[in-house]
Length: 223
Image 1: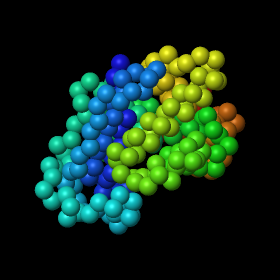
Image 2: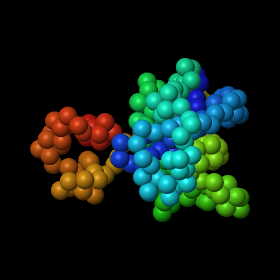
Image 3: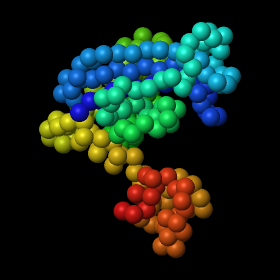
């Protein structure tokens, strides 16, 4: 079972194109040793939005000589893709057929009382003394995957404490992540803020009939 931590920088939130990709290949869940890494920039097919410029500090003119964003592919052996808000990066690269492990969902599950679950906030929570240095280049893709690995260390430590044993393999971590992604309260509509268990039955049926319903909301409704 092969797992990679992946992060992307993009043109922005509106139909995002890839401008920078980075990944770390991890040896095993027990060691989290990095066996290979990757960093590459790409030329997008559209201008970078100002909000993305302010985040990544990557300028359009810097990308003129790079390969087009459509040239990027994950390595062929990827089975598990790990990331903070991993679905965003997964969609940017064309929704490849891999199992996704979301460190943000796991962070929210394990530390529900934290007032923020961004990756930077989690680094401050767990690595306060080193956080300023670790986050100096936050939103650079390679730095972000390295920090995600540090967060993964803490996630696995906490899960081991909760389970009374280490997480056995990537498949078990994926299953825990999938469960963590199922919401407990509804975040939209006239019943926003209500527990899924408390939703009226007719409203539950209506939601389940919506073809574009988020798959994790659907799982919450079917519990």
